[in-house]
Image 1 (cartoon, one colour):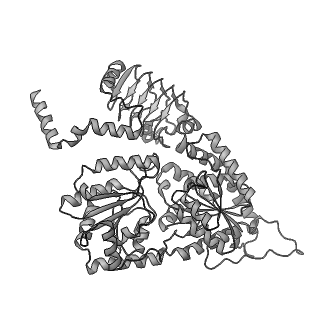
Image 2: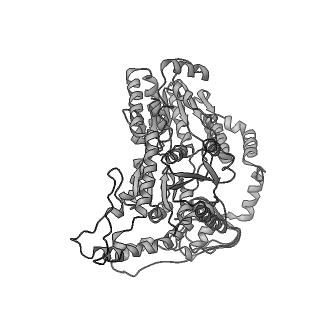
Image 3: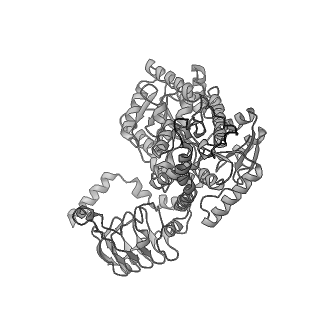
Length: 639
């Protein structure tokens, strides 16, 4: 067979390499598709090329491309896969899944999606889309039991799923003896008796659609926990190992670093850029910390293989690795509990209990994360998916004539899930085959159209919010700016909403075109429904978390303050605020105040803005908060 592996980036996913090598060892032809220029200039491409693996350019659509460009990318990907003569596409990461599913519809290519992490499933709209789209995968490989449970909740049948993690190289990542530990600490400039906590994670900037305002790796939570640990007398060093992911990640990392510099214990935090070998840091560490909001196993896997216990949030698959035997499990975002766990880890380091935790972590890794065995299991699952996919179903055949041979039954492998081809109608179920043909084909035939619409809207929501709004029926003028739009923004009747030109909508805004309270009256009045359109004029800005109620008309040149609940019409050139919203001032006065307060950085880059802001507000940031409160009280008393 010829197996193509497709990912959206060459920056990071080295975990695909063991699968590719295992497929080659099994006698398959293999090819890897990466986007340009990553197919030439990336660490993944260089390592694959050195191993003799063919790497070609993936024409899959890029994030941020227009809908037309995305469609062209999908068609080009379809042509590329056919040109390569691929039998199976093994794809990772959600953007790749969307592209491959659509590009291979109607082909004989077997689709296998390996889910690296559950982050995208934290978004309500994407979960709804996945309820339909996941049925386009001939096999879904969940990298943790948590991911499998999530897809089971979406209705994906058990025989269409396997649970196989990406695993860890257990020979490369192994517990350090005392000599290696001392050498690692000396190399890193750490004291031999010093408490050392390490967090290995890129800085990913906050995402618009999931956990808005929070970096997914939870660095802010960890730093708040470390500050609390330091305030309560904790002593040691926290190593944050990992740079920013891309330019946006670097900018976000610098913002977090500037914020953290003012926290207690900041002088005991080391900020280390990404390295090619993290093992010396695990060798030096007393404890590993995984503070993520969403995760499969993350760095907890490598730390466990190295015999290092972890303090981890109960995110995704982490509870499968970390429990009271192998470390400390805390709630999502719970800096207080994390600080307490760090205090316990610091107090108990180098004790028999600490050694038992480390040994238990290693045993857990050996049980769940043996990369060599898992890679061959993944390849076996790919082969099985292709066999099942191309084995004719009994219910879809015409009844055989007495003279024709009966189709042979397919015997399922005992070690692999039983697929549809192994289900027999049996002689005690006359007509079962015809029933299957009638009942099951109708939803399958309708699936591509539904899937295309759902996928298209999901793409638009991620890449083109204005295009998404138009696709669900909202009428928009030109140059509108929509920030952090979700499936809930425009409510259940988006076709009753009209926005003028140059309308700006901040995150969390809700347009409500019907009054849901009247449902309590439906017992006596079953037909009652209170619905009215919403109209917004030109050059209007609607602030964070504002709610626009049914029947409201908002004039042009209006500012709606954050958190406002707009229940009545708003006159042109006014600023409204409050719940219910009322006119506070006119736009001319507001504009004069804004111009007087402007710092003149609107056209600057984020990095330049940061420099200007830190310089301009240095005194305010350095001031003791108690002094600020005291000053405010004096002013209040004087007035």
